[in-house]
Image (cartoon, helix red, strand yellow):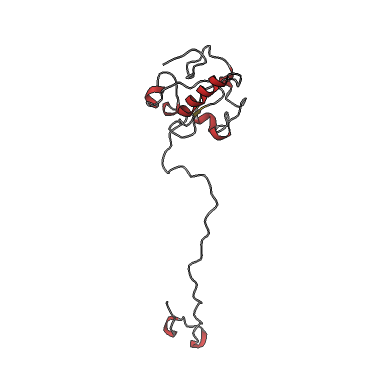
Length: 156
């Protein structure tokens, strides 16, 4: 422990020394409130770039361990079909793009890019609900080249 001596105290008027400052231990810093992990420093992939765009031409190269293509959630009327879908869903539900925001939606099995999430066109993965996908998920398979799921009969 450090003790101040008279030679350590500054001189005031009339050669009177100031009293030493009281000893102050390092303040206790409480644990911070849990917050999302910040993005790492440096440039992040652009969610509109090829790193965040998934379609039938690149799904196997982006996700080489994927054994089934994402597909829409079936109705609850067939328990066996829904159980099979749940097993398949486990394989692709955690996949994400380079920026970490893109994902396959549960409702359609279709890709939602990180840019669509960041710009408010789609909900984040943890908040997704039926009816809240980007508009292109509701336009049907005709004329679309970005659809990855099996709704349009695409198979790998």
